[in-house]
Amino acid sequence: MTTFILFLWLIPIAVNVYVDREGHKPNYMIVFIIRGMAAILHGIILDVCCDYFPENLWQFSVLELIGIYAPIFLFQATSFWIFFELALNSILRREPFYFDRKERDSGWIDKIFDSLGTGAHLTAKVCAFIVMILSIITIYSHT
Image (cartoon, rainbow, N blue to C red; front, side, top):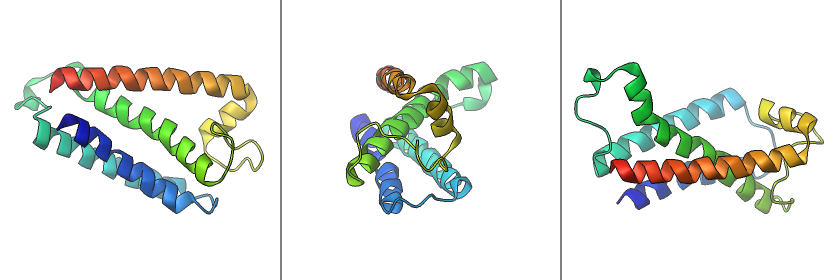
């Protein structure tokens, strides 16, 4: 069941790709809020279906709560960053790891990598992939 719930996270990614398929830049604040709501809903579904979270969350310290929630957040953030870019670039027929180097009107992460170069971008993607895999392993160890 955990595998199915993790795969559900592909739905917000696919919706975001569908919305961005024309290449227009979205209102990033609205997109961020919607992604946040999807992430919260995904975490709730993970809890209800897989009994991921402890029953009495209020008895934990802030650091313990961060340790409980961090693997889910890391999975959501890294998988979104990896799969959204790959899917959108595929639909727009760009190189797989293309990021905004021409228009310069994308988010702040693309601006950072524009100054650091494609090698830094690819290295960051590999690191994100490793973090994603480690977060999946941690999620499975909690369920």
